[in-house]
Length: 188
Figure 1: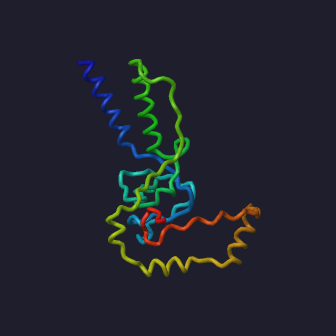
Figure 2: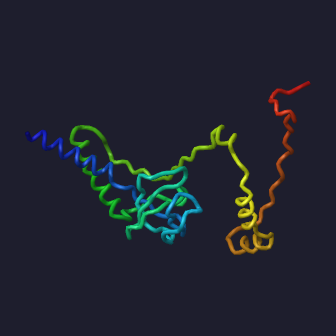
Figure 3: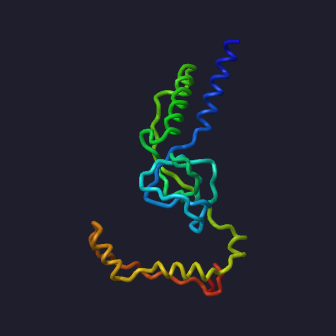
């Protein structure tokens, strides 16, 4: 009976660790969106280094998150970084559960020295052949991008405010041209 209780407790701790939302921090000030994508309505403004909890929702490069205030929405994957030092309640709960599980694992002879792993990874799949074949032009998106264009003067002014310095870079050699037919084989 004692073994069953111990097993049940271990399973409970494992479930707690698996369900705990992953803590993260925003890398920059951004808008929390109601839907995945830049076109979604804004739910809230998040400052840089704001703690959030990553939820299970994911659509392409968009990740669903929850703020400490309880607002739920979507942010771009690249705008999230790892939380450091227990930035949220979820991180503390997850750390407690994984430390408990690590202790139990060490008790049974597994594990070893605790490993500290930090880093940020992101995986975004590319376009598939079908998506490319069915692609349609989007003139509105092109116009929107053209609206973001900055003048050379604006670029130089921005660069002068940043801690950058000019560096002379030699041009790359001209690339050899591929056959016009689109055939990869070279014709003599």
